[in-house]
Image (cartoon, rainbow, N blue to C red):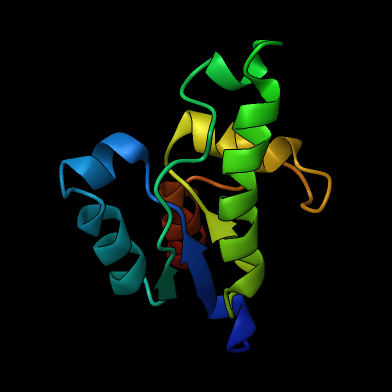
Length: 113
């Protein structure tokens, strides 16, 4: 049986999906799979593809990423999910997290098992 923490996920929407007001599809899928979802109020993870890995942009990328990291840390959820490759990489590279976060569809698949 799941505990409340097992069923709560913070959701970091992909920048493009958020800008196009399409993040609600993934959030809705997670909720229909039985998860409580804390949608993080973030703008950008700071990666923008390879931008955040480029030496001249790295410090800026990390500064932007700290806003995301703070939102994840402040969330009541014990697990973050993110559909965006860049966002998942930024979170996965951060020292305070245990690897790359799962894609929302992975959590839906888990719930169906």
